[in-house]
Image 1 (cartoon, helix red, strand yellow):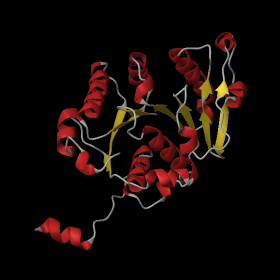
Image 2 (cartoon, helix red, strand yellow):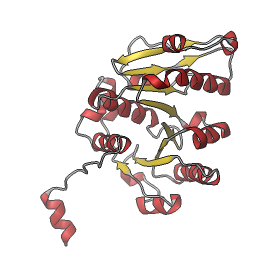
Image 3 (cartoon, one colour):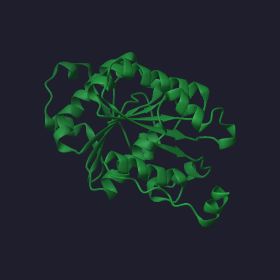
Length: 255
C-alpha cells in the first residue's frame, strides 16, 4: 500500500502515521511504514518517536546481499506491531535510496500485514508512477481543494489508467486550511478526477498542537479522526460506519 500526496503540505505523513497507528494499536494488524523522505521529513514526530535517527546506508550496501535479519536491523520499533523503515545516505541518490528501501521492505513483507509507503509529492518521479501501477495493491491519494493539487491527482489517476493498472484507489480531500479558502468544490473535484471522493477531512486549527503533545489523532473526536477511522475500515474490507447526523441536521436537510 502507498499513500501519495498530490503536493507538499496536504497532510500525507500525518495520514500515514495515523492509519498505521490505528491498524497496529486498535486493529491488531502488524505494519511496516516506509519513509521516502531521505533528506528530512517529519514521520518521526507524527509517530511520536523520540531521539530518532535514520539508519545510514553506505555506497557498498548496494552490492551486499540482503537478508531478513539485516532488513530488520534497518527498522525502528514504534510499538509492538508497528515499525518504521527510514534510511539516509550521503552517497546514494534519491532513486537509489527508494530502490534499496523497497528491497529491504520486500525482505520483511511476510512478517507484516501491511507495508505502507509514504509517497510525499516532493519526492515523486516517473519511476514512482510505474512502481505504483505495477506493484501497489491499494493507493490512497491525498489532495486538498485547490486547482494545482487536484490537477496533480488527476494526472496520477490518468497515468494509472493509461497503464491499465489494477491498483485500488481511495481518495481523501484534506482541508489543511479553513474551508472558505478552497478554490474548488467537492463536486468539481469529483468531476475533474472522474472518481468519487471517499472522505473529506475538515480543517482543524488545533491539530498541530495535539500532534506536538504526542496525541494519536485517530483516537480523538476531530472530524479528521473519524475520517481516518473510515479509511482504516475500507482498508480492512469493512463497511465503514459513517458519522451519525444529529437531530437538527436531519430537520434542516428535510426542508
